[in-house]
Image (cartoon, rainbow, N blue to C red):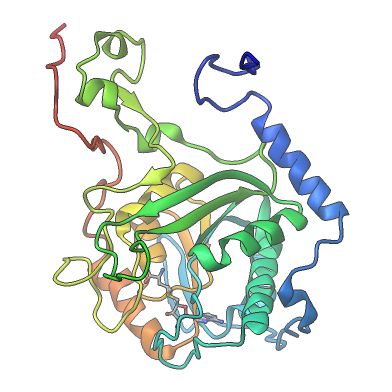
Length: 338
Ligand SMILES: C[S@@+](CC[C@H](N)C(=O)[O-])C[C@H]1O[C@@H](n2cnc3c(N)ncnc32)[C@H](O)[C@@H]1O
C-alpha cells in the first residue's frame, strides 16, 4: 500500500512540527486532567507543608532582587509572597541516586520519591504566573512520571529537550548514559514568553554546507533556533578542572544550559525561581542577565557556597550559549561572499 503523507504541516514534506502539534499537546493535557491517571506515588500521602508565615531569605541582594531561602522547597514555596508571580521556574531535583548532598537524604523508597516529585512539582506550578514556563531537568527513570504529572496538572508541553553530554560514566552492562531530559512546560502556550532571537546559532546549512539560500534570507542569515538535543562547547558536564566547577557540589549544570533557558523564556526584570539551587547556577545566570531570582536550597552549607558564587564570582561564560555552531561535521563548502 502506498505511503499516505500528512500534508498539514507548517513546512510540508519533512520532519517538521504539524501545525496542530501545540493544540495536540494542549488537548493531551486536558485529557490527562480529566482522566484519573494513577501513578505509583499517588498511593503515598501528600506532603503537608510546614507553615512558614513571614518567611525571610537567608541571603538577599538588590539590583536585581536576588533571594536565597534555606529549607525544603515543599515548605518554602507555599509561603512565598511571590506566589502566582514567577515568570520562569527551573528545577533540577535530587534524582534519588544516593548522591551525598549533605543534609538531604537522596535514597527514598520509589513510591515516596514519586510522591516527593509530585509535591514539589505542584508547589512549582502554584507559584507560576499565568504566562509562566516550567523547566525540569530529570533523568530517564523519572522523566515519564514528571511528564504525566504535569499533563494531569493541565500544563502544556512545548519541548522535550535532551541535554547530551559526552563524558558519561563508563559501564559495560548497557549503553553509556549520556543524556538528561530538559522538559519545557507552560501554563498557557498562547501567552508564554519566548525569545528566539536571544539564542540563535549558526545553522548546519551555513556552517557545513555553505548554502547560499540561508545567506539570502531577509533576517537571521545563516542562523537557526537550536535543536532540541543540546550538546557542544560549554554544554558538557561540569567536572574535573572545568573553570565553572564549584567544589563540594554534585551534578552542577553548565551555565550555557541555564543561559539558554533563562534568555529564551524570560525577559530582563522577570522573576526566575529554582527550588533546588545547589551550587547556584540558576541565580548566577539570572543575575548576570538582569533577572530577579529566588533560589531554595535545603543544605545551609550548599546555600552559603551558592551565595558566594551568585554574588562574588558571578557568571564566567556569559554569552556562551548562543552564536556558536553545534555542527558535528567539518565545513564541506565555503559560504559564498556577498
Ligand atoms: C541536583 S542538585 C542541583 C544542582 C544545581 N542545578 C546546580 O547547577 O548546581 C540538587 C540540590 O537540591 C538540594 N535539595 C534536595 N532536596 C531539597 C529540597 N527538598 N528542597 C530544597 N533543596 C533540596 C540538594 O541539597 C542539592 O544541592
